[in-house]
Length: 72
Image 1 (tube, rainbow, N blue to C red):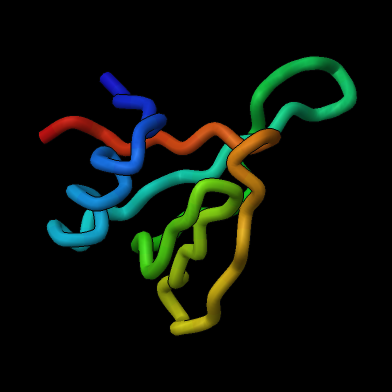
Image 2: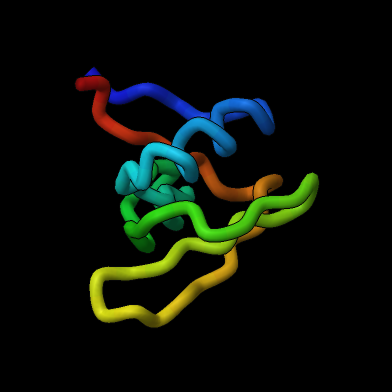
């Protein structure tokens, strides 16, 4: 079952454990779709930076993005 990351402590734990996190955003039909996946490299009150498999990074706005990872 996926766990949603909301609080700063959630992102902190995910970053320390090097857990892959999925970034989801609403599509035009109102359904969440995955727009990225990676390890939390940096987070702030307004954004999260994920490092992808290939080493590239993406920034996601916390207001419009839902972050999830699978519970172990």
